[in-house]
Length: 266
Image (cartoon, rainbow, N blue to C red; front, side, top):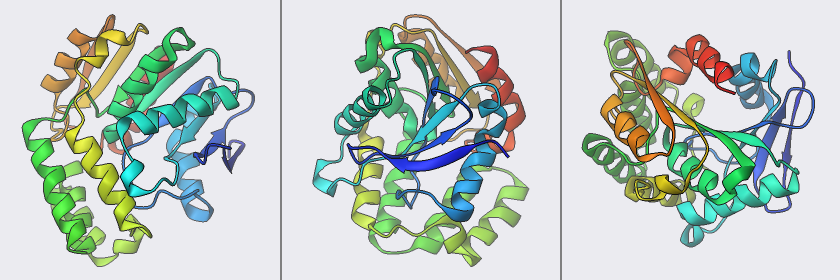
């Protein structure tokens, strides 16, 4: 297994370092129910998800600082990531935004300016689709009602469209919600989900100078290929790739191809 450890920056941002040497890739994941520093099996899962990339490119996976719900916004999160990059002395790095981490990645790349040499988005874009925004609003309502089993089932079904997702993965998520995660701080989860649901970074794209690549599943409900293509046109220098037969959970279902695309563009 690749070398790696979990830590927390002076700014309160929890992160995991993977690979040998100074990270050249900053990974900004999407919203997860649990946002605290990963350990145990969760840390092993993080290692496994990025192992193929980290074998060739050392990286840091950064979550969100444990802020009060009223202080959570795309701006405050991006400011934390910029501070983390400075603390870790990352002067020439690529940024990888995954899923709902993509608006945070776009804002962070814009703030870092020339210190960011590449922007990569997986299952993401500058704004949600109309259906994607409706889904996040629905999930906020479920979270407010404390219906975590239903939330887990609906999210998994949306991320992995098709019979396998609906008939196998979604029921497992409902039966074992702790496998998917229950937030210790629901207010944090709700504030973060609301911030992403309202996020629209289309006008901010012009401030990202780094070349970009977007990789989206053809069945993605939150950020479909048309959203990726629109975002690519707004960025200074960007391409988009559509992943056949993939949904929003493409980072797991199509991990090999995505890893190869990422490594080829670093």
